[in-house]
Amino acid sequence: MPANRFNAFADYGVGMGLRIPHYQHILKRKPVVGWFEIISENYMVDGGSPLAILDQILEQYHVVQHGVSMYFGSAEPLNREHLRRLKTLVRRTKTPWLTDHLCWGSVDGRYTHDLLPMPYTFEAAKVTAGKIREASSFLEVPIAVENVSSYAEFHESEMTEWEFLNEVVEQADCGILLDVNNIYVSSRNHDFDPYEYLNSVIPERVAQIHIAGHSNFEKYILDTHDHPVIDPVWKLYAHAISRVGPTPTLLEWDDRIPSFERVHAEALKANRFLHALTAIAP
Image (cartoon, rainbow, N blue to C red; front, side, top):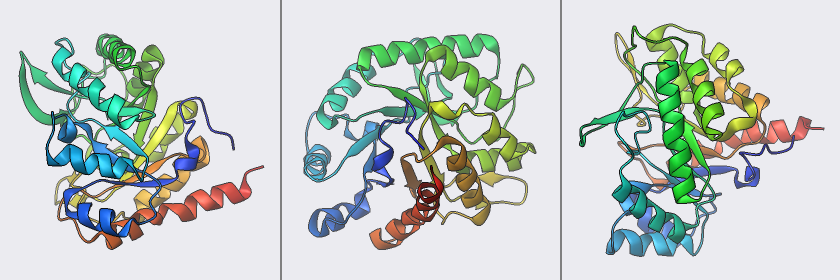
């Protein structure tokens, strides 16, 4: 199954998030990892230890940047200083694509530091898509936007979340970072069929996939990234790659982080699905 035009890096395979507790293990042991994903904002600095570590990682591994504060869905313009610093990092890492979230999180220059769900309206899609195009043009790198987990819905919405995602990426002509754990979490919180979501996503726009664990509370599920991936999420992942083909896949584990070996072993579980897909491909 050939790569699509937003996924020219299918050979990247399975990656891991680059996290501080694992720095020394990676630098000393040099484990075999397809690629590392970094949180861009952690390295948008002028110098010091973070960049020194990153430069050592870049000598050995592919690195892909993942952002948490572009807030394409916010009503205010993009932060130009943020974009300038981000572009400096893009040039340093040579990231082949850049990801951030389809959400909002800022009002009048004040930032919530949270990934807030959007009203799924045509006007919101138009504004959001325009900002994605603007960012991609300035940064000179392809962008893929991630579906977020959500815990609230807007009465003003004019379409489903997956229809909104498709509307935005078509207007922006950008890729999708498909987070299958977020789909599962939101489906449980809002009572929809996660397979209907997956079957509706435009396959040729999926550039990357996230998998992760979550926490199950009495009335809702929270996307905590502090547990192994559960079987229903693995099944969603298998269904996703059956539709979109071999796609760079990243395991997120961001809280109560265990040893490198344990996180790596959890990430590599994705290979059994990728290898199975490759084996049956014509």
